Image (tube, rainbow, N blue to C red; front, side, top):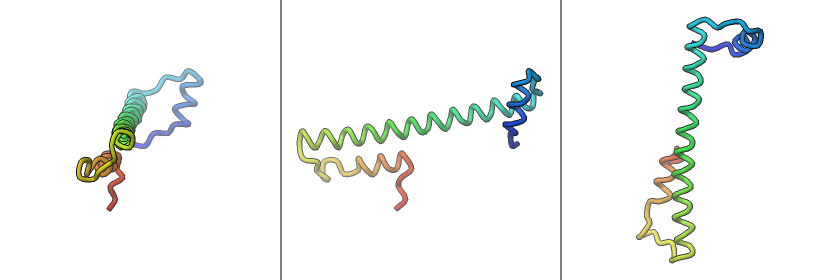
Length: 84
């Protein structure tokens, strides 16, 4: 069910109680937002780890495909960038 945010905001700003259905919809929307944020954070962490490994290999030893063949591909897949 679609949530009418302006209507809920109006009700809350005037101290009007939400119905159980409206409260449930609002809580589900908030949970969905939190889940999306957590997924994006996991993707960011994966990308950071891969880039750090690639960067470290640049300073410690040459980045070699035979030693680290899939770091970038795995990071792209984890963050949803594997469109090929």
